[in-house]
Structure formats: structure tokens, C-alpha cells
Length: 278
Image (tube, rainbow, N blue to C red; front, side, top):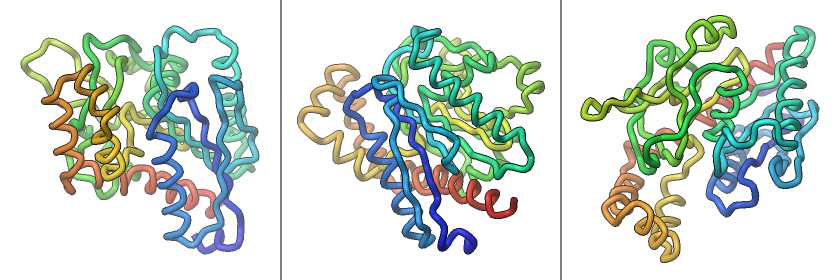
């Protein structure tokens, strides 16, 4: 990374939270700032309100992170913000096709991941029978064992999951056509007759995404869950046992802390490492 010591690394955060209060943006900002300070890099980032203001970044950024967000990834087909979003995606695809250009890396989180899977026709994007909310194990597939962003993680590793939708029934022919690889799937539940959801995909050399929230900060999330307002909301929607389980597991140093300190920092390291070799 020494080549970047005196250069500015520009990161774009595509905010898909639609103005809703969330922890995701705070966590992403903190990961970027901690990473930049650790490596003594000159990093700047801009945020783009995709769904409310229909803002998308141009191709002047080196790295892009597209966030999670509320609502259905199916109900927005063809609307104006989504059209702008996929025009942005196409601009990055076109940029990366030119071998003379330094490649631009993109990370897709949760809602963004579902949108991209739908866009690429990778699998069945559908509503879950019930909301997935909590700390859960994720299991790596063979391709995941070789994936650089999972470096330092155990198998299974633990993630914060919060979603009403899922990606299941992968289209393997389409995956082969794209050169995409499924990296991880959700926990095995032999007592229920449901297919396990896809939890992480490398779409190509420069695009990667997760169905879960790799940005979730265990300490911050634990404090947030213990606020009176959030505690009441979680108990009302998921029950007191789920709230207690979340707080307990977020305090376990062998779980979410590992995911937080590995996945997005590994992604950023890889993006900058590739940029320095071009």
C-alpha cells in the first residue's frame, strides 16, 4: 500500500436506506476511517442518497460500497431510482472491461446484494416465510475457503442478519456464464423444509456481496439494542428471548467481532492491492 501513502483514495458509499434511521452507515464510516488510519492512507469518502434523492456516483471513485436498506427488492423494478442505480452499475462494468483502466471494486450489502442477484438473474429472489433477525452462523463453501475477503475467519463464522427477503435456488448455468461463485450459505436447519439461502457471492473479479451485514459493529450494535426504544421495538417484533439472545451473542468476542474486523477491511485491502499492481 506504500504507493498510496501520498495519494488520495476516493470511496463512494451508495446509501440505500431511504432516509430510515440505521446503524449501517455509522458502521461503514467507522470501518473506513479505522482502516485508513491503520494503514496511514489518505482516504476520503462521499455518500450518495440513492433512493430518496436518486444520487449515484460517477466513475472517479476507486472503491464503492453499496448498503443494505428497507423494503422489498422486488417492488422497485423499473422505478426511477433503480434505473439510475443500474446505469451506475453499467458504468462500472464498462470501466472494468477496459484493461487499460485500474479496476474499480464494489461491495454489495444485503438489499444491494438482493438487487444485484435479481439483476443478474442469479437465483430466486423472494420473500422469506418469516423475518431473519439475529446473530447466525454462515457456512463457507469450497469457493469461500479460497476467498480473500474471508481470510482470518473460522468456518462457520457468525453474522448479523436482518432481512425479510432471500436469494435461493441458484441458477448455476447463469453463474458459470458470469464467472460468479457462491461463497457461503446460511446455517443448516434440518428441522425445516426450506432451501438454505445464498449468503455471499463473488460476482466477478471486482464485484462481491453478502446477504448479511459485515459492517455490523458488535459493541455499537449491543449498546444500540439496549436503548429503551430499540429494546421495545425488538421485543414487540421478535420477542424478549430474541432480544436477550442478540445482546448476549453480540458480547461474544468469538462471533461478530471477527466478521467486523475481517470482511470489509479485507475487501478494502484487496481493492487497494489490486489498484497498486495496475
